[in-house]
Amino acid sequence: MISEEIMSKNDITTDICVIGGGLVGLSAALKLAQSGASITLCAPKETIKDERTTAFLMQTVSFFEELGLWAKLETKAFPLKTMRIVDGTQRLIRAPQTDFKASEIELDAFGFNLKNLDTLQTLNAEIENYKNIERIEGLIENIQTIDNQEQLTLKNGSRTTNIKAGFVVGADGRNSIVRHSKNVSVREWKYPQTALVVDFEHTRSSEFTSTEFHTETGPFTIVPHSNNKAGLVWMEKPEKVEELLLLSKEVMEKKLEDKMQSFLGKITLKSKPQSFPLKGLVANSFGEQNWAIIGEAAHVFPPIGAQGFNLGIRDIEALSEVLARFTNQENRGSQYDNARTHDINSRTYGVDLLNRSLLSDFLPIQMLRGLGLQILGSVKPLRRYAMKMGISPNL
Ligand SMILES: Cc1cc2nc3c(=O)[nH]c(=O)nc-3n(C[C@H](O)[C@H](O)[C@H](O)COP(=O)(O)OP(=O)(O)OC[C@H]3O[C@@H](n4cnc5c(N)ncnc54)[C@H](O)[C@@H]3O)c2cc1C
Image (cartoon, rainbow, N blue to C red; front, side):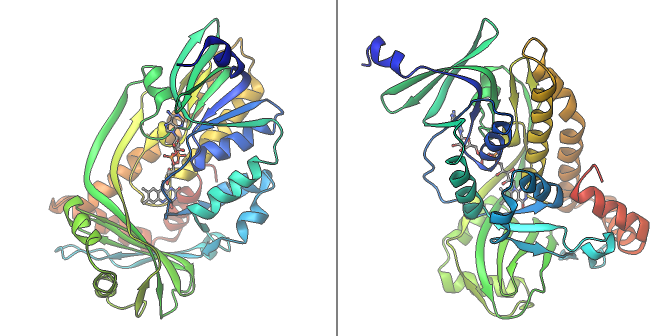
């Protein structure tokens, strides 16, 4: 039992409390600290190594350039020059192979792939350089609004810290405590899919092409890490992924090589396969008064077209503009909500539609998907438009 006296020593007053130490929370803490505001960053110690790779599209690269961090991140980044879509279904109507080249829209690359572990390490190290960011380890358990101020309780084992904040940023992932505390309803849906993620080496060159095989159970995507290293994101039925995770290294390597029809040559696994159950979720409000939710606290969808984290970065940009423009006497959360509604909803529905069109056995849907890809493959202005929209809605 902690006495009142000890608890009061742990009380903190801050301008902005950022909750969550994932890619989005760390990026938000750094961006918001640029205004000089005092930032308290609350997150538990991470226990699981995140073996995923994330594609940074060019707008996200500019975000990190402005933070003065891109030069560090770039040393660990792999350019994404071509995106290839291959219809790997056995269906009657199949789309032709379609290549999207960054050079067609006058770019060297659509973006860069980075391992989450490398990005998290760089962001965490950078946070140590900021005097106005205080980091507290633990889980936020309670948030209340009292006298136009947010009051939070953080627990770390038996230790309790009380935090008073002028503004709360929930970057606390898909089960967000901020979202729950503020009674935000969500639209939530399931997919019959789990993503299997693993890194591997291959003997044939990928030429920096990201290849997405569209299969009946979802995309099977190979993301280049260098000419002979890549990451795989394989969306499959959950029961199939459970079986795959039990395979020995050698059997799994053979299985992957067969699945890729050996186009990358011999495969050698370089990480332990991990699984991520997939779902869709979008909050019905992204902010109100003195709070906002960003990243997966606000929107969750399947890993198609490298959208999730990049959308989270656009959340941070919008939030930082709102906090710079409006005072705490104005409804800053609601301003942020207005600024984000269109982009978040259109991305969520776009990705959902694409994923469902793959899973659907309904012939007219297959025809539409096949035709859509064929048109994108052959009509140049449409291809350019799709590529520009894919990397940023503002281009
Ligand atoms: C297989 C896969 C591949 C992907 N690839 C891409 C890609 O190429 N490009 C792309 O843009 N996106 C991609 N995404 C999506 C991207 O990974 C997510 O959008 C992003 O990681 C979400 O980060 P986040 O910080 O919002 O959430 P999280 O990473 O879930 O972080 C949440 C944080 O909040 C903390 N937390 C939770 N509850 C509390 C609490 N009560 N108190 C304090 N802290 C708390 C957690 O400990 C954690 O630190 C992919 C997703 C998957 C599944």
